[in-house]
Length: 487
Image (cartoon, rainbow, N blue to C red; front, side):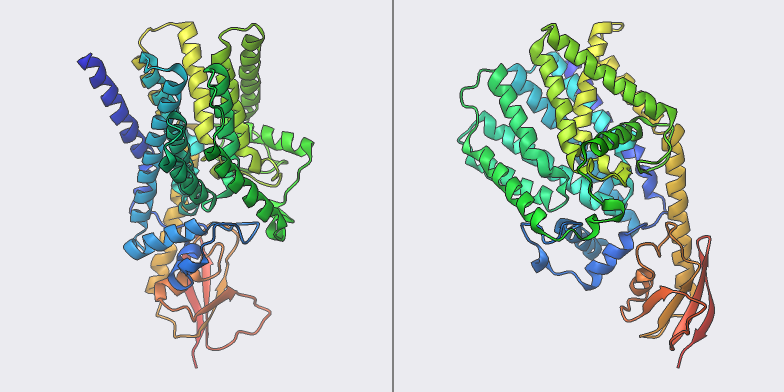
């Protein structure tokens, strides 16, 4: 018994260590902020106001006040120490991974009424898939993504965990209060958690049916449901804004939804592909297309066992976790113009539950090696391998290149003579490529010079420059000043 406990503790410790090491490449000294990270630091440096926080949305797109609070807190503590930001993000992901382990373990205990020997192994496999599968990890590599998805997932996991405690002891009102608070926090981090009460409802129904729980629903559930409905009603009364056209255009056509769903399956299984976003017209790898076949076979296998009435409770559980995947991704299926790796992070909780339990089930049926700990080791090793070959390796190399490029640009800016206040800065050679000028032409200059009065814009050779001004030329991650006129 002591040896068994020792092995479990070692495996649990290994989960955190491997999860940390897998994305620790973001802690390189020559990495930097990227994409819209600079824009958010600029906002919290000069425009942050805690009074802007609201419990209901004020805009249909990108109204996520907890992200702003997150950036503000990190900026107050770490300033422009980008390594510290990535370290916090990585540790938060490790914490989420352990929360997934605790959540699925609690669920399995509730379903089976006792802590059977296989519960630990099942929970560890689920958590390792969540923490280590490379398609789940873009939120850990991109700070602005982390500020949405990691925080949303963190509070969603706490919501579910507190609600499970409420289910266990219905008069524990502190748990339903905490579940409500955490659900509000999840929603104000990102709308990905919108269907969380419906997922909880599925679990309530499952317990009621298979455990003959006469209690069924209690008032606590309807508190979460009421907030979800209020949030949705408020959301759809707001102006469409950026969701009218472009990347975030919404399309509720059922054919479009099916095609987007298939796209996400391709993206999820396309481990040979280093792209982090798709559109409906994008090219897909063969491995990604095979993923659709794998998914259909798994669904067919589950339905076949249900038809034959083989262990109905177990296979209904698999089917319910599959439906939970769909519900967690429901807000994404109406966006035909963009399918993004970043958006997998919250659904990864339910994707990991689904695939982790199916993998364990297949292992038990094949029964080649009897040791359940051996299966955990095999899953660990397979996931480590996936992070170091194919698309994951190319993605990491590309991302490191972007970080190095951004840092070289910043070093050049710091070596340029400081611009006086109210200077017009014209940037030549800026494109849509990912560099520190992306999402904003010159916020990085305002931050580095600690001067919000400098106005930056894209250089137009046909237009007259307004003095005082400077012209910078950008190319391949480097900046040089080509002209300056200061009156």
